[in-house]
Length: 160
Image 1 (cartoon, helix red, strand yellow):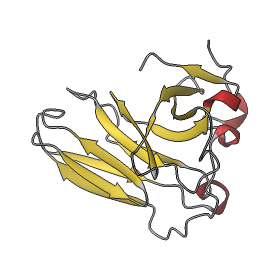
Image 2 (cartoon, rainbow, N blue to C red):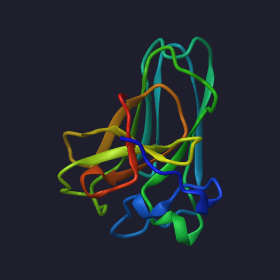
Image 3 (tube, rainbow, N blue to C red):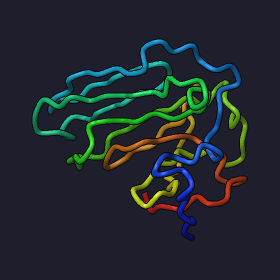
């Protein structure tokens, strides 16, 4: 299935489909960055994370997690992951908060990414063993959020 484009957002993600925190985080600094090389590594920030396996990049690469800081969108479980325009040599794992969000306990929680076509694309996801995060392996970075895919319409399904 495919999703209809959402032209009303002017290229900005449609937040109506994105999970929200039960208690909105108080974020004063909206981004984190770290250099990760061919040996792999991890970047954690406010419950969001990037796990780079060994061999995913062939040189030192700046990885970033940028969270929305404005009051209207900061309550949503979403982040922009970087670097952009990089296809990894191996999939990179991202993690987004699950515990304490509106999709905790949902039948089909999923990580979605905002595509250049203006749709959310369902990437699937697995809940971490501690129940705190939802994780998925991705081939590239963009803006990602979480949703309950079973109750959501307008989410395209990806083979990833």
